Length: 427
Ligand code: FES
Ligand SMILES: [Fe+2]
Image 1 (cartoon, rainbow, N blue to C red):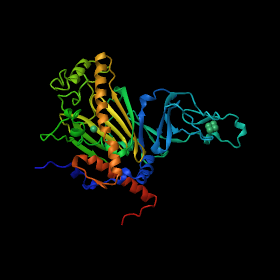
Image 2: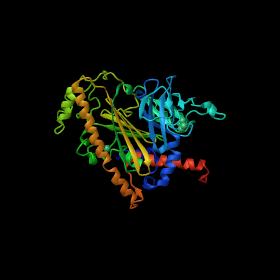
Image 3: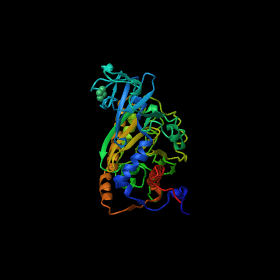
Image 4: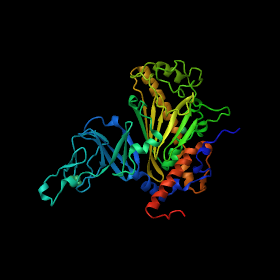
């Protein structure tokens, strides 16, 4: 008997090839900007980055054609606004992060409060009919979900962040995001479409091959040696994959580096002995005891005994992978139709012993090498796609997420065009 296919659960997504044009066509990218990115919630960071009144961060977001300032104001709330002075449009914030009392424009000295209100205008009486109350910085929407800060370029969003997340991600509240405070980050500008990059992170088909010499050994394979995800969920926009690991390996054992991990995990993995040794010296090295944490039910939703982690893609470009011992938050930020800023952040528990720190450095470096493998195909894939040699790509069952993304984006663009009267309603 053949196992049920993931595709069978989502007949509306079809089973045919998917078109290449959305990956290479600047006109399609212009539609994505207008109908996806400028009207949805985009992850920009964590609340731990802005703990105090006056803390701010600057985010250049090319797909919004904007630089956005996010600041914690005197009422302790977060505000987000365009980095554009209301006088003659100079910038009002200049550092990537900082702490300030007010924002001062360097051109003529206009001053703005932390919530964007205009408070000071030098030589104010020389202006004619100046109404300061209408000349605050131009706001965008900002909200948080489990400590992640999201902005929406639309100041009056169609959907609240809560309603945007809940259909697929309700129930994450008990995940210990706030316990994983040791953050490591890498950024890379990659010459490929943002979907080429994200696609490489939302299927496991490539792992046996591309990561054959690095990490493939740590994930669970079936009797034929194939590396299938345990399950996948496609929401209206978001999608999730559940992945099983080999608990005898350090990388595939979700309890590694928590007090619950066995001391001898990985000792039988010839060729990976350093991982086992690193784990051994890390025991008891975390600042917080993570052994008693009860993970949310929605992680490992199939209750698979060898579940290792979830891949959660928050539409459109935020990848959040949660494990019991750390989480990864990646963004695939479009710059143009063939250029993407890959922002990778990994959050580990804080380690307070030398052994713990060594283990973390080992895990971090191992992950960095895997990421380099992931990035290694992207630019050649984009260049090959742009030749026009192929108009379509074929997709297997466990690449469902790639298909789901293509269909969801097409649908949003079509809805947007129809709203704008640029498409006739279907007969
Ligand atoms: S442009 Fe900002 S004060 Fe003139
Ligand atoms: Fe990969």
